[in-house]
Structure formats: C-alpha cells, structure tokens
Image (cartoon, rainbow, N blue to C red):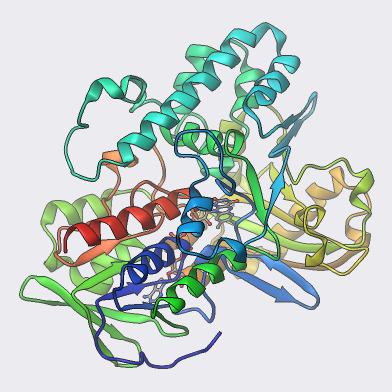
Length: 500
Ligand SMILES: Cc1cc2nc3c(=O)[nH]c(=O)nc-3n(C[C@H](O)[C@H](O)[C@H](O)COP(=O)(O)OP(=O)(O)OC[C@H]3O[C@@H](n4cnc5c(N)ncnc54)[C@H](O)[C@@H]3O)c2cc1C
C-alpha cells in the first residue's frame, strides 16, 4: 500500500472522510460509477474497526470477530456481502471461512451451541428447553419475518411513512419493541429467553433496551446467512474494498486527518486536510463520528437547530475492553466455540450493569486460530477476551488497564486452567484505545445505541440537511456492525447517485 502525504489533485467528485467499512463501501461503489473519489484516513491503514495489527509473529483483528452474508443463500436479502464484493470484482480477494456453531453460551447449568442453520438453531434450543418448543419456534419465525420486512423497508430511501404498509405488518407492530418485549410474549421460561438473547453483546445492549427489529435482523443474518471469519484477518476485507477503489481510479490518503469540512453558499464544497491542503468536491461523505462531523468538522451553525438538538440528544453505544492474548495451551481439549460467552447466570441485565461496580462479571472468549491457524505460529493459539464497558467506568484507563486485564485473564483462567502459565503474549485495548484508533466518541463500538427509538427512521439519516454532505457507517442508517455499515455504505452511494 502506498502512503501519501497529500492528495494527488486538489479537486475530486467525492471526498470520503474515513476508511471504515461503511466509508470504503460508498467510496468503492461511487468510483465504480466513474466518479473521481478520494478517501482520507487519519490512521496508517484502512479499515477503522476492521483493521488488524501485528505483534511479534501474531496477527490480531482489532475488533471484528464474525460477519455474515458471505455466501449466496436462498433468503431475502441474504448473501449481501458476497454480492457486493462480486459486483465490485474483488470477491476473490477474501477467503471467508464458515464458522458453525456461530457461538457458544455458558453459565452454571447451561451449555448451548448455536448452529448456523435455522432448523438446527431451533432444535438446539428446543432440545434444551423442550417445554418452550412452541414459543422458541414462534420467536425465530418472528425474527425471520421481521428481517425480511426490515430489508424491504430499508430499500425505501425516500423519507416519510412506509409505502404499502400492508407489506410490513410485523415491522409496524414491533417497531417500538425491545427484544425483552417480544421474548416475554413468546417464551415463558426465563432461562430459555436468556439463551435466545445470548448474542446481545453483539449489539451492546441488554434485552430490555435493544431494538427487537435490529436484534432479529442481526441474529438471523448469522443463523440464516451463516457466520464467517475472513482468513488472514478482516484487514483483507478492508483491503479488498481499497483495491476496488484504486482499480477504478480512486485514491486513499493515509495518516492524514480531515481538519474541516468547507461550506460555501449553503452547501459543502470540500474539505481542508490537517496538512493544510484544500480539496474541493461537491460531495463529502463522512464515515467519521456523526456528531464530530456536524458539530466539530462542519460547525453547528450550518445545520437546522432541530437537527443539532437531535444529534446532541442521541445516545452513543458502549465501548469495549479487549485482551489480545496468545497461548501455547492446546485448545483441542478445551471444548470452546469460535466465540464462547461466559455469563454468571441467565440475567443479562445484571451482566450488562456489572461494569458499573468494577470489572464486568462476564466476557466472551474468541479463538480465531481454530479456524485460521495462520494467525499464530504452530502450536499456539490467539485468544481475544472481550467485555463491554462504558468509557466512564474508569476515571483513568491508564491506571485501570492492568487491573482489568488481570481480572479478565483470571476470569478466563477459570474456564481454561493453565491459561496464565501458558501465555506467550497479552495486551489490552481500553475504550480510549478504541477511540484513539477510530475517533469514535468514547470508543463507541456501534455508533448510536440501537434502541427502538434510534433505529429505522429514528436514526440519523445518511443524507444530512446540509446539501452535499452525507454520512456512511455505524452512526447512521441502518446501524452498527459490519452488516449494518456495509448496507449503510450502499445506501449512501445510492443517495449520492440519486442527487446527481
Ligand atoms: C471490540 C469490537 C468488536 C466488534 N465485533 C464485531 C463483530 O464481530 N461483527 C460485526 O459485525 N461488528 C463488530 N463490531 C462493530 C463493527 O466493527 C463496527 O460497527 C464497524 O466496523 C464500524 O464501521 P464504520 O464504517 O462505521 O467505521 P469505523 O470503523 O468507525 O471507522 C471510521 C474511520 O474514520 C476515520 N476517521 C475518523 N475521523 C476522521 C477524520 N477527521 N479524518 C480522517 N479519518 C477519520 C477513523 O480513523 C476510522 O478509520 C465490533 C466492534 C468492536 C469495537
């Protein structure tokens, strides 16, 4: 990859601020259309939260563990990433390895593997909770139906009520529902409800707060579409999008922050880079934090007061504390999933709250070397320990980091005896680390929280009220996670095209 200090030209058709996956998807699609596109990234590599890093002979994903939609499937809206990469001519640059079961959940008295196939997923839960068979089946059917309806609804880019509301009965019924609301309607047993909700950390909110619509879409994307790891790290996915961009004449400028978005005569006309270079473009797509885009890079005076108030009032998602470790433990006997969620019990609300009183009482262990041994030398495994936390949970992360890392390793050791003696490497990432590498406020991992009020039309739209300025990524529609930001990038490119 080439490192530039200045953009090759002073004018482009489109400038994209940030090379997270949402920004790169928009950039690659617009370059494919023949537009002259410049992507400006402040980090030294592309990808945002999809970037990977190397330590000694280990390769770690900084954040992403799994994605969906990497193979063609017979479900409405399925195989989305596969289709996109195919359309961009770079599908062969990503070798996606199928992960099945998608995840394992454990708490005292429960061990459950979640298979990546609809009927098997239902059966695994029914086998564990036979008296809840009808409710479990009904819940999964609701998830599948609402995912199809949500997919169709996202296709409507014009603002306002849904055209043909009769096509969206479940979506309209559950649009304000949380996951807990729908589970309570369908399933009587608290443990069965908790097992079905086990993937809540993937959206950062417990069942009582997460949007059912978004959770159902996310869960079904893995269960119906399949869960995948990108061999060689998810950096390869980001690099494939960069390759598409560059093949179509686009440029990527690394290690250069955008300092300011320029507004003239009531519309954006380009950006000023940190190095002082002024780059003109009638369209600016920001993949950066939405609040920073409007309030810091542009200036609140350029937006309607209502828009600014809405942005200020919107609630960002949690951040994460991550331990990146390498071990010589032989995981063959450890009976771990690709990702194993270790909860103290069936109370996800208490687990989510536990960070407030010290180190969280739960974590997930991801073992990417089980599907991709090339990430570590032979005989060693990578283990990524993740828990969710608000940046405010520690007054100083510099001071708290080692204590948290020790506590996470001690927690994992209870499940993997001998872990600490077999450690070859361990390093932690705090909310401040997440923020430092992506500039997401307080290290938010999914943009704005995906509560019922902050998804669908309740989410900040991809087209801002300022002519020429668009958003792509997890702060905007449809929302967080790789599947969300890839769709967001497609949606934004479509809006740019539609506006001429
Ligand atoms: C620990 C963790 C685990 C996760 N696991 C998963 C998972 O398993 N599966 C999944 O689907 N999702 C997962 N996610 C969520 C997912 O990674 C994100 O939602 C998604 O990658 C965000 O993409 P984005 O396009 O919004 O851009 P981001 O990744 O937020 O990137 C934004 C980019 O903009 C750049 N930027 C910001 N400001 C400027 C500026 N002024 N000038 C130039 N550049 C700028 C940043 O440097 C950054 O590169 C995880 C997130 C975290 C943190």
